[in-house]
Length: 238
Image (cartoon, rainbow, N blue to C red; front, side, top):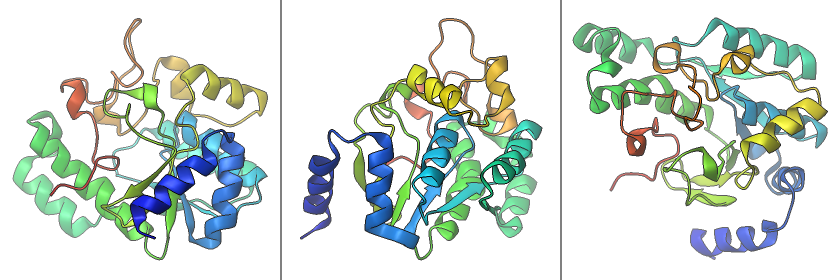
C-alpha cells in the first residue's frame, strides 16, 4: 500500500471521530514514534491536554526561535509544571543564524517575503527537521478556518517534506470550540490571547488582531494572505 492509499484509509477511518479519539488512535498506531509539535498557541495547548489525558507516549516538542514573547517562555514553564510532562525545546543553529543576520540584518523579515521565509527556514524548519528524527507521525493544531492557506487540509495527510504522517485532530473545529475546551478543562494558555493576540508566533512578526480581522491577520501583517505561512504546513516545492 502506498502513502496515498494509506492516508485515504486513515481519513475514512477517522472521518467522524472526535479530536480525543483521533489522538487515541494516533497513540495506539504510532506509540513513541508520535510527536506533538506545539507552538504553545491555544490549539496546541488543547492538544497537549488531550495527549496527556490519552496517556499518550507522544513526545511534545516546541521551537525556540530566539525571537519569542516573554509570555511564551512563561507558558512553556507553566505547561510543563501543570502536566508534569517534559516539553523538548529545539533551537536554531547559530552557524546559520549569525551569517543570516550579518548579511541581511536583524529584522530582515520586513524587507521581503523571500527574506522572511529564509528566516523562518533557519529558525523553524531546520530545527523541526531535527526534532522529527526517529518519528513516524506528528500532531499539529491546524484548523481549516484559520486562513486561506489551510482550507484544503485534511484530518490526516502525508507530509512529503518530512516523509511522515501528519495528523490534524482539530481540523474541523472553529475558534469558539477551542476556547470552550480550554475553559472547560482549565487548560493553561498564553495570556497574550487576552490582549487581542489570536495567533502568536515570533514577537517581531506578531501583533494583536483588530476588530473584524481574521484570526491570523496579526501574523506577518505586512504580507498578502496567501503568503502567510512559515513553511511548516506547505507542500514540498518541486
